[in-house]
Image (cartoon, rainbow over the protein chains, first blue to last red):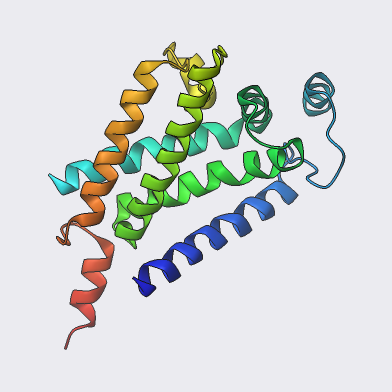
Length: 48
Length: 150
């Protein structure tokens, strides 16, 4: 049980790290720490 | 049987994760339409969830930590199921967003309906089957354990 919890925590942590790193370097990456903007504005920024 | 279940679950979540990673804005819009999460955590969820799917799919397919990955996928699918049931109960008509842009490319229906519920229940059953199985057939973990033995 303890082993499964540790493995689950490792998988969740690894995926979070990979996601944040990819988001930081990807051209389609998003800014995660800002006030939400309307979906249309977000789409316009992404299409630039 | 277990290998077959692993291939199905692994491939589905690998493809689903890749499809969502390639179009994150669409996934954000889908999450917003579900009206379940606070707006502040929607972008982080949209960035993180596809990578979790991809990683867990890879683990199940390769047979590395596959029992834990299958358990996490079962929990994740239970969450998806709850979200789908909540949307159906509230009468909101939205795209499921399960396969991102892939559904458009292949012309597959991707709406939130009872088919999505049945599909999720099927996935949960397969994941639990993998989790409770003790067989180490065609798995990287089994291979590493065999090689490690003197």
